[in-house]
Image (cartoon, rainbow, N blue to C red; front, side, top):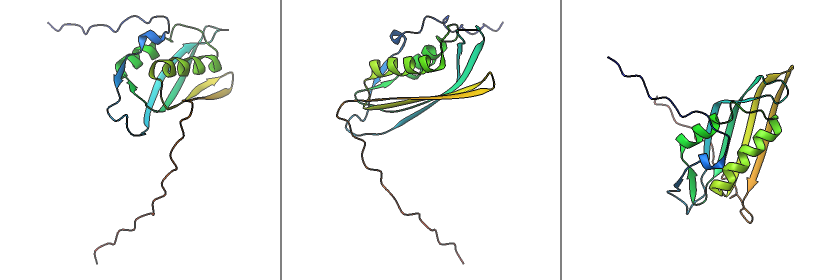
Amino acid sequence: MIEPMSAAPEPQEPSPQLLDTVPNPQSDRDYVLHIRIPEFTCLCPCTGQPDFAELELVYVPDALCVEFKSLKFYTWSYRNHGFFHEAVTNRFLNDLAAVLQPRFMRLTAHFNVRGGLYTTITAEHRKPGWQAADPVALPVATLARPP
């Protein structure tokens, strides 16, 4: 007989305590993590109807990185709670920034249509004194084709 898979934990109240961290393996250099979260869900606080969004998290870690499974459970914790788009985007960013204390973090929330409107919210956190390095412009390589 096949044993059923263990169920994921029941969604909890969104809380930064749901987020776990791992040490940054390269804390001596700036590098960028891009995390795409395509299945974010919360409820409209006015109607109780579900709101769906794709979140784009981009950050430059300092001493800590987010542990991905905890980020998944943290994301799921929003699905039974009502939030306005602006509030939930900023809360998500504030919680992550408080736990990770990154050098830089940007969260962009692309909400699906509601009332004929698509909403995109972008919020940023920057560690005091941190400056991004100047971008490096590399020439485009042209590969010679064999005759």
